[in-house]
Length: 132
Image (cartoon, rainbow, N blue to C red):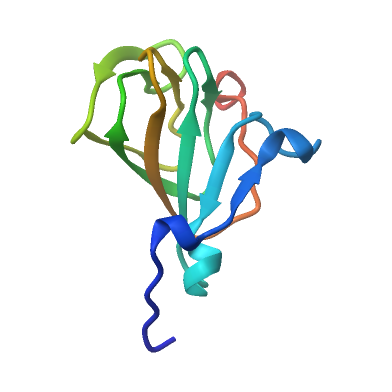
């Protein structure tokens, strides 16, 4: 890959509620697809009040999140040692392979998170409570 440029508003929105195999029921923009990325996942996730990504882990993938808009309550860490942290715009957080993580939108308007994951996997998530 040489280089690519994309504006977020030009990347189509996917409504995950229309795809049975992929929870949660959120809207996303697949930045990675728009840019033709092969070794990195990059998504914009959109949240309405109360929506969340459940606590989960990935076998091999490391993930990095950046909060663009809104306030989130995070659940981070291994099973039995989870910590809860509230974050807002400008906050980064990360989870390594087999490390539990999840977040719930606690704001009143729309929340937006930019998420990166590598290596790219089709792993839908593992139950952190079963990793011990």
